[in-house]
Amino acid sequence: MEEGFQKFFNTCGPCRPSRHHLVPSLDRAPVVRQMAEDDGTCFFLKGPRQSGKTTLALELAREISAAGRFHALYMTLREARGARGRRLGARLFLDALDSALKAHPDPMVARIEIPRDPAACPRSAARTALARLCSALDRPLVLLVDDMDMLSGKALQSLLDQMATGLAAGRPEAFPRSVGLFGLRGPDPSGHAGGRGGRARGPAGRGNRADPGLSPFSMAREIALPPFSFADIDKLCELHAAAGGQAASEEAKLRIWDWTEGAPWLVNALVSTALDFVLHGDPKAPLTSAAVNEAARALLRETPAHLRGLAGLLSDPGVRRACSDALCGGGAGQALSGGGAALALDMGLLSAGWDDRLRPAGGICRELVLRALTSHIRPPAGLRESCRGEGDGPDMTLLLQEFQRQWRWNSRSWRTPLADIPGAGEKLPFLAFLEAALPEGAVLEKGPSAAQGGLSIAVRGNARVRPVLAVLERPGGPGHQGYLEELSDAMDAEGSAEGWLAFFDLDPAKGPDERIFWKTRTLASGRAAHVAGL
Image (cartoon, rainbow, N blue to C red; front, top):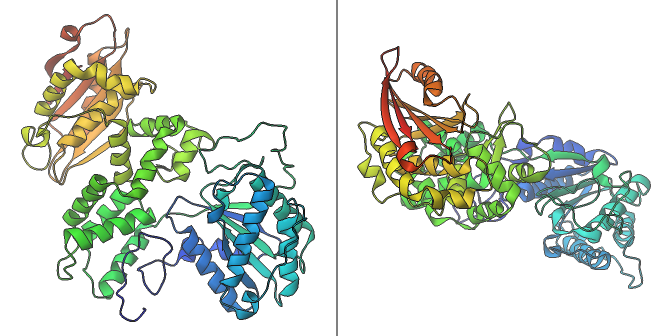
């Protein structure tokens, strides 16, 4: 540790072992070093913003250089943001290469200067510069290029072509032994950048298409940097405690996982907020689940730049629809490559389960997306207090009756901004209402219903589970009686004496007085099922 500094959880820029609590990045993707040291390899490491790509690249460069078999050169194209033309792209690449050489810790490498020929063809400038560099070195070079997706269009395609040509023909003396590329999303085989929403850029047939046989991405291995595992979260908490900080309870670690699903920036920001602002830096105060929950609410309330960036992805219609489907218990059958679902996955808004069903990537992302999609909906002030039930959950009868009152007068204005997403105009306002009424300690779990377009919900606390089934009933459907069997099964599974059915009647011929009703049915099991017509 650097003298005079205490380690902390970093939320800004690359992590440094001497300053920050961290899990070694290469432990999360050990195959990366093998790929970097393989002769003739090109690989692409992708991951969301603030997921540890730059930390891993710097760690990899240090370890390879320290081993002594190869030189490793880390360079970043961050300053090339948005460059599209070949000539500008070549100039910015050479500027970045020159900066990386001057900053290299090995004096022998730092002294190397790459002469520039003003008349050089931009189609070969990068390849020529790398050939000269490799010829001046006493050991083979591993080149690590960060922020690769800052380039786009012809600038990106020209650089990819030069990398491919050099790897195929220039080794071992006149080109890097291997090339590692790092970015949010890799270009597709046609050379288009995927980091701007995944859309193809530029008209086909006008210089933007690449020979798939030359593109490094047709022969590169694409590696996704995984998030922290629960074991990583446990290790980070133990490192902090061992350095004289607070011990974290097992329940706190579980809540960190539930809120973040291991997204590195979210983990660091959540723990840092809990330690510094909830516990006020008191090393004697233990890190509890309550402190973690309060920190999560503070992050959602303050919405730092990273969260604003994630929420901004919802301006993409495909991302908006994919996230809405995932929130509403759908997310099955969506293509995981291409389109909004792939962008939301790559950027860390969504995650995929073992069955490839999409879901929000942790509680913070879930609430961030729900709040963004339902920002036009204003649940009544004091909803949590007015619907407070016994124990650790809301009084679902009072809550649904309050939703009925609000739905009668506001359904049109609540639905309209969500009209382009089937089913979202009903289910998202309902979810927003439930979330607004959840007390401390209660958790809302949801999943798909057997009913077409339905949503199965469990409001879960330590002492009681409240099963809720929300269904959208179109003209000619089975009616609410047809869904009571599924609700009864959910009540049996949860051991609940009561269940609630939110029944959205979508028949346009019916007015509010026909659609909005309240009925309580006694099921064959003796349990009570409350039906809220909406």
